[in-house]
Each structure stands twice: as structure tokens, then as C-alpha cells.
Length: 82
Image (cartoon, rainbow, N blue to C red):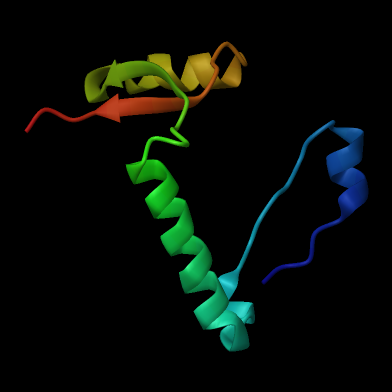
């Protein structure tokens, strides 16, 4: 893991969020239980993801522009023809 200067993030008005479960080897059971509860809530439709715009893979630059321009809400979906 590298060293980050928080001042650079504050100055640029940026946010850095991360979670590394490998640092919690003694919490495996608790993490699995939490994941199971989350999956159950999703299956029961108590929670659902917020999906934003969809872009075909060929329009990836448009998707990036939408994200960079902060013109999206929810998760941007990229579809790949199969």
C-alpha cells in the first residue's frame, strides 16, 4: 500500500474511500454473515441498486464523459454485446 497525503485530496475537493477485508482475517464469519444478510435483503427486494444510464461498450468514451462531468446518478452500466 502506498502513502497518500490527505492534504492533496482536501485541496482538490476529492474523496478517497476504501475497504480492505484482508486486514480483518479474524472477522471472516462476521463478514460472511453480513454478506448473507445483504444478499437476502436484495432477494426479498428490500434493497435494490440505483442504476444510472446504460452505454454500449462502443460508447465507453461517452460514459466516461458523463461520469467526469458529474452528470450521472447511480451506477453507470456498460453493456458488452455477446
